[in-house]
Image (cartoon, rainbow, N blue to C red; front, top):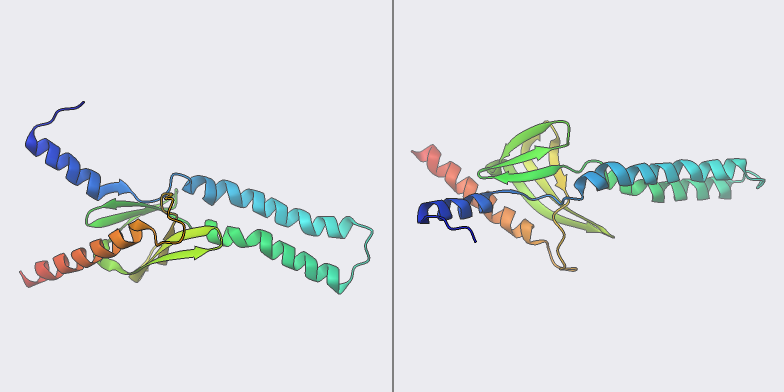
Length: 172
C-alpha cells in the first residue's frame, strides 16, 4: 500500500475528485465504430430493394425509408458525443480532434437524456461554444437502470458552487 504524508494524501484525494474523466471509455467506439456499421446497414437496405425482383411500389419505397431511418437514427445520437473531463472549475470538452475548456459557471442546464438504450448527459451552455450550445456525452456505465445517473446530480451541484464562487470573486 502507498503511504503519503497528510498534505500529499489530501491533495491526492482532492485531485481525484476534481480531475477526472466523466465520459465513458466506450465513447470512441460509440462515436466512430458503431455509426460505421449503422451507416453500412443503411446503405445496404435500399440496395437490396433496388436489386430485388419486387416491383417498385410506394410500399417498398416507404419501407426502405422507414428501415433507413431506423438504422441511421443511432448515428444522430452517437456522432455528436464528446469526451468530457472535469478539471475544477472547468470542463475540458473534446471531440477527438479539437479540445475546448468551458467554465462550470457557463453551464445553464444539466440533463439526463434516456431514449431507448441511448443514455446521455446533455450540458446546455449559457452562451455558444465552438461545439455549439449543447454538449452531449455518454457517462460511465452504472447499474442503475431507471434512475438518473449520479454524475448529473454531481454536475448540478458543481455548477451551483462554480456560480457562487464566480459571484463571490466579482464582489471582491
